[in-house]
Image 1 (cartoon, helix red, strand yellow):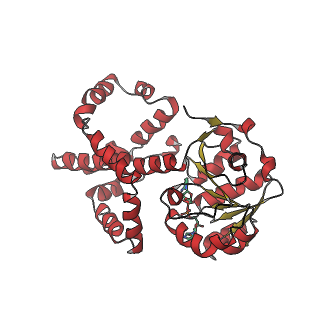
Image 2 (cartoon, helix red, strand yellow):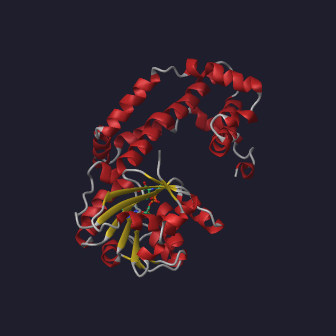
Image 3 (spheres, helix red, strand yellow):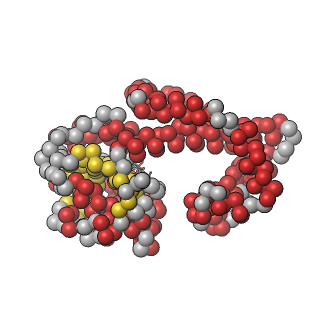
Length: 331
Ligand code: NDP
């Protein structure tokens, strides 16, 4: 059973008088920096000179080059894209990560696969919100929070867990609940969902589109039916809200019977073997090695895959029906 921490389990005082250096002012960086500042902490931003740095200045934060911010920070939150973290760590961070500092990640990828190996005399923790940055901020402002995963990679001070809990509290996550995990579990689960669950959903929709249009259905109606009406999003939302099975009560009995009676025929149990091999590829580091090589070559395969996906006829069909749906109903 997962261990879950709440407000009463976390004490912000372990961060009082310390400086939190948020590296990167993007999705997570801007939300976490503002929440931490509103929680009474001293927050500075480390950024390259770009639009993000301007935005941070506009929001009233002191902004420094990354190496300076790491030098000043007691806690360093690395909130730049995962694929650039290794390079930025080597060139701007490693040298300034002196004994006693805390390095915090929002995703475990670079630790898990050995792309970043911090010195042994710093605490290394992970506080990974399960939500996009905009909502991390929105929830905080409403007085609630978003759940997060917390893991301790390296406890040099003996206080790493209290510090990770305080970070969680400062960004509002303990208001919702913080699940204790490991870096490997968080990373592997995240990659598995991306590589074994979403492909089934996305490819399922593409194949369904192809079959239906080949069988004479109107492309626009098919797109509306599959995802563009927002009904599919609503199903996922209700799964989260009322439960995986309970959400079926919002659908007709015909729909309930049709889905449940055909589910296994459409996706036989043999798919579990493919899922297991996807997981094995993640756990062995084979995927990380493949992705690292792809990055070094300038992402040629990713560009080609995106080009191919963007020419699927589903794209043309959806353009014609954009504007039909009132998305405020889905919020
Ligand atoms: P973003 O893509 O929003 O980028 C964050 C910041 O990094 C931006 O300010 C960006 O600047 C800057 N940046 C980009 N490239 C470089 C570089 N080469 N050198 C220095 N700075 C750079 O990142 P996210 O907030 O999405 O992700 C940050 C971390 O949070 C990742 O570990 C991610 O896995 C994790 N995470 C993200 C979630 C999300 O909401 N997206 C959810 C949970 C975890 P610029 O504006 O110039 O591009």
